Length: 354
Length: 250
Image (cartoon, rainbow over all chains, first blue to last red):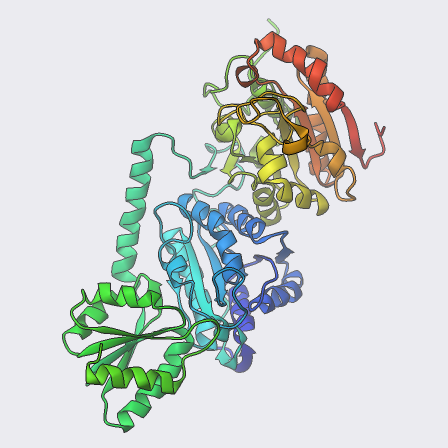
């Protein structure tokens, strides 16, 4: 157990990646995640790791693809417009069944957007960021502690299921400082993977890392196999946190910074006699449908609190099979929902107003 | 009886899918012979491109990675940085290397990345059926320059070796061709040097091979080889454009 330190979210995740055994980081500067690259550039050379500032986000994700093909832990980080560029490479990672960690410290969009916090890459992340049928595991930290913990978790899940994992943080998580207990260093099993390109040593058949299948039946089969894996992930890997749900009549659904603000709004609402609780999804894909569906039988309504125009709200409606109304409480452009914003939505939901 | 001709160990038994008269087969063979002769088969990792040689991973017996279009030098960078004791090469065509992947090409050269690039320049997009390439010659008729490449609207061909020779990064740049026996022998020497450089830790080595595409050029294989002499070499002079060893310069 390490001691408690005060760290910025971006630095905590960078250090956690190193503790997770990642020795290959490829990045490209973009606000608000540049501290990750800066941290790695200082640290990696001292521990025999690789920091490389790539010529573009596209090159960075393809360098990650190269390291991942050799069976080692690799990561890149960026922010929304940069993540859009990485989508090509993420699709190839998924299509070649390669593990990797992609960090997205989200800023406002679309286009160049802004540099203030946002959660508007929810669709991009949860619907498979790139072309083709695939998913990435999406983790949404809501504290600097979780920035560190989820980084470890992300590498573990990526390795376990041989697929890319995205740490989807909003800009606030990257920029804010909080006390954090860093994880203990992970001892990795360095036995070469039975699929990785490590050189045949003329002792085995060659390994091919590839996503091209020109025969339709073969391509269908690899997609079906992948979706069997996804099904297992949906059954076994959903993470969420419940807050004051025991007697709740209104259920807030929120992740990241808005979940933090929602906690305060819930406490305030309860002072005013309104029983509000929260289900905070920690994995956004797989989305914690089961606890939401269970809650749908108990609560009057849901409120999806998020920093986008209501992207997660659609998943909430799907999860509860539209059994109860779902209200939206959203701010965009880098504006962050306030306790008052959320209280107003709670009162709206309480009255049952459309 | 003495064996005078044999299949290189580093080539698989798979039947090449290339068109009759295409020079990809020759270059594959040269690469495999070099890998055999240098004794590096067991520690070589190849990166296949998108283009006619997209299935190169089926033809070499070494470990192979398929890259996205143009990204082979970035993927090779990752593989090499993961384990610098491995010998990493990319095999790329002109659309892959000089159009969509130009950024990755230039920057891997800038970094002096210790990798070997085999660059097939046949002045056309072969796999997609004969469209204009960044290296198509002025006036060259292709599916997307049906009236001939108009340099006023479609720009000029890129001379990759010359362009990269302006950078400090590369260790070795040479343009060769494989349109006759003598040229094939020279091409093999260049390819061998490009791999040897990597073994010696000298850095970025690229061999550009002027190649033929009889199918999409609409020529017989023989005529296509002559076209390399008549049209391509005048625009793309053969020779060494960079050699940090100081040998063969100029």
